[in-house]
Amino acid sequence: MANVAVIGAQWGDEGKGKVVDWLASRADIVVRFQGGHNAGHTLVVGNETYKLSLLPSGLVRGKLGIIGNGVVIDPEALLAEIARIESQGVRVSPETLRIAENAVLILPMHPALDRAREAARGERRIGTTGRGIGPAYEDKVARRAIRVADLAEPATLASKLDELLLHHNTLLAGLGAAPFEKETVLRDLLALAPPILRYAEPVWLRLDEARRAGRRILFEGAQAVMLDVDHGTYPFVTSSNTVAAQAAAGAGIGPSAIGTVLGIAKAYCTRVGAGPFPSELTDEIGRMLGDRGNEFGTVTGRRRRCGWFDAALVRQAVKVAGIQGLALTKLDVLDGLPELKICVAYRIRGEIFHHLPAGPEAQAAATPIYETLEGWQASTRGARSWVDLPAPAVKYVRRIEELVEAPVTLLSTSPERDDTILMRDPFEG
Image 1: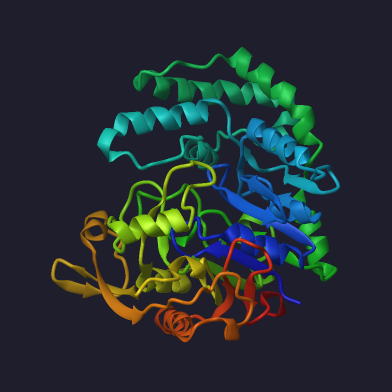
Image 2: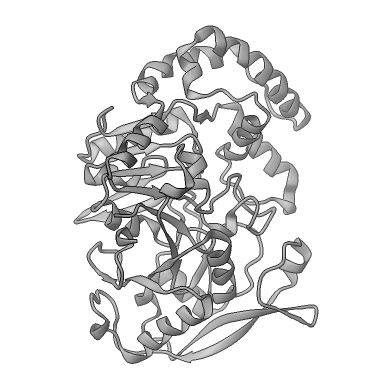
């Protein structure tokens, strides 16, 4: 049996939560491998709705969850999230959750710097969540970060804080923000150490043992390919690599163990925050997609921008991230539209492009070239078989497969976990 890596194939918020939850029921271990609490997955299980940001989705199904070294962890946010889902009846203990001892921590100065920078950018702001993800990754690559293992060494913690605060307080002062006191930060971290360290371990060892034992591992990505810090619409991206290759580095396992790469895409397209969005709709159809699709960010609560499905964008994600199959979500949101459009290419300054260039001016200038398809009046909501779908809906899905050059292996027709049409089991490789 193969392992599976699940990543977003657009700009995030594609409905990964439901798909990961569905796959987690068949996995033994679920691993988060990048990002922080700036991304969220919403799971609907019966009458209960779970909103997760740091915790792997498999916890809701009683599976072992692992937070890998590629994740940046706000310890207070993590403990609050644990308390919240425990109040909903989910048991979280060192038997069900493990955290990489070499994962980087988000400290109070990180969101403070994040927000101060966004305020200073004014109209040029990127649209970050202000939760300190970017500054924490900056500290990681600058080799001054405080990691989970450092919580077990008070002397190391105190020494590292000297360098960290020298850097951050200087930046905060330049941006007109208040500095942080070492004694306060150190006291708070030492108080957080015991409840965090009970989950800490070298998770790479556990994953190696699981791989050797043939256990099924599900790697759960956050955000999406077009928010990748290298391959996305830079600078309007997240601060980590979101492609499937990061699953290996961010979990501590060899790339050959990643297995099948499943990309998640909506049957239309959405984006939260600033940045280019060639197929965006600002008309009544765009508003309808937002209302019908309940398009509000799990973490930010901000209304998502909505538009037609962008096949050129998803094809780019397929090639960059090695996506072997697509899970297409929210097909039912398109019910009742007389016609549908798919973006097949872009026109940029009179020239036709079949991918989104790297330059921000070119990205901003991209206008969509559309192909129009017939819509359908019959409802697809809750469909669990191809025969339950109207013919134009089947034709729409098949055309997406042709344009993005990847098969649709799973089709979701409502938020309910079992309203899913499976063409090929990702765990079968």
